[in-house]
Length: 151
Image 1 (tube, rainbow, N blue to C red):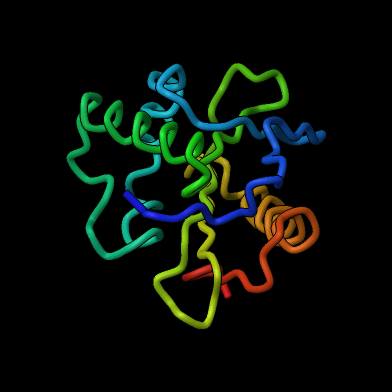
Image 2 (image 1 turned 30 degrees about the vertical axis):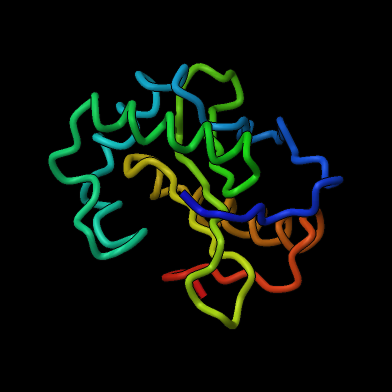
C-alpha cells in the first residue's frame, strides 16, 4: 500500500457524480458481480491499457474481489481513488476510473479510465475521458496529473 495520502486532510473526496451518460461512485466489494462482468467482457480492450502486466487475462472472481477490497481500503485511507462508472440507471457497470500516486516524478498522480469494450463504438470512452480529465483538473487538488496511454 502507498504510505501517504494523495489529497490534503481537509479535501472532501467526491462520493457520487451523476451525469446524463453515467454515474460515478467509489468502487467497493459490493460491486463485485457488475465489475467482474464489465472487466471480463472487455479483456481484449483492457490488456495493456493500465500497465504491461497482462491484466485482466485469467482474472478470477476471487482475485477481483481482493482487488476491489484493496481499492475500497485505499479510497478510505485517501491513498488512491477508484470509481465504478455506472449506466444512468445504475444497473450496469460500464467501466472504471482510477487516481493513483504517480510513479513518474513529473506528476502528482496518474489517472486511468476505461469503458466496456462493447460500448466503444459510440465514442463514450472519449467523452468520458474528456470529462475525467476536466474533473481532475478542476475539482481535485492536484497541480499535475498524467493519463498514461491517453496523453
